[in-house]
Amino acid sequence: MNKDFIDHLYIDPGFQRRGLGKTLLKFARERSPDHLWLYTLQINVNAHAFYEKNGFVAEKFGVSPPPVNEPDVEYHWRRT
Image 1 (spheres, rainbow, N blue to C red):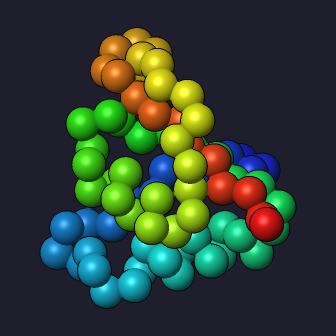
Image 2: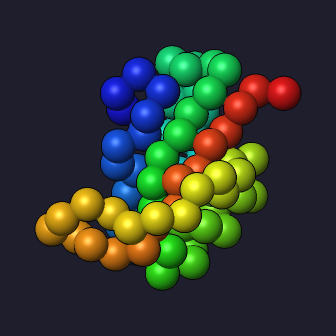
């Protein structure tokens, strides 16, 4: 994390669906209780489902910078 930006959140597929990602989001929310944001690639449908299930909203669609150069989504979570 860099302030309220989640730079990387990755769970090895063999350990997914065990609550680890949710625990990491809880940790992030403790450090930034009002707002979090991140990018994920548009093709990563599992990430979209995970973040949306956990209250994130897709706010911007664009293309990630080089060297990736892939369509991405900017997600935000705000405390309500």
